[in-house]
Length: 198
Image (cartoon, rainbow, N blue to C red; front, side, top):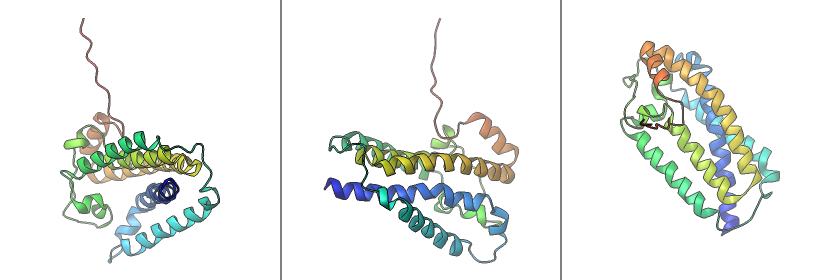
């Protein structure tokens, strides 16, 4: 069972690790994708699947290398998975499936061109990416696989670059409204508010 979970963890982390690269492909060339008369996802989705295959092939030789092998790590991993699922659920509120899929970003004049700053997005700007990180951390902690930790680190670095590109694209679309939102709301980790009374 643990061997099966570790194999699933490696595959899940391969897929999750490519998400920032997929979105970086969109945000770095948004004008190019918007210029297509047909859906750009006809090219983007196969490119993303190609990323899975490539990253899977690259990391496959190390998929059994582990830092530790124990069953109890799945207990805290389950808690992290639960937090990630809660963030996903919260991210879907006030947000359409088209927005979650990035359709307004690549289809000019799409009717869902609106900036959502309510719900969980009143606390963090990019909750879906935080949920992805929780899921990757859960698989890394539970499996103990070196490759899962390495893929998580890769996703964090590429995600940092991608979020900068996405913020620039959102600022271009929404202007001062987004700039004000960006100044007020942190990227993926909410501010911890403390009250000190004298």
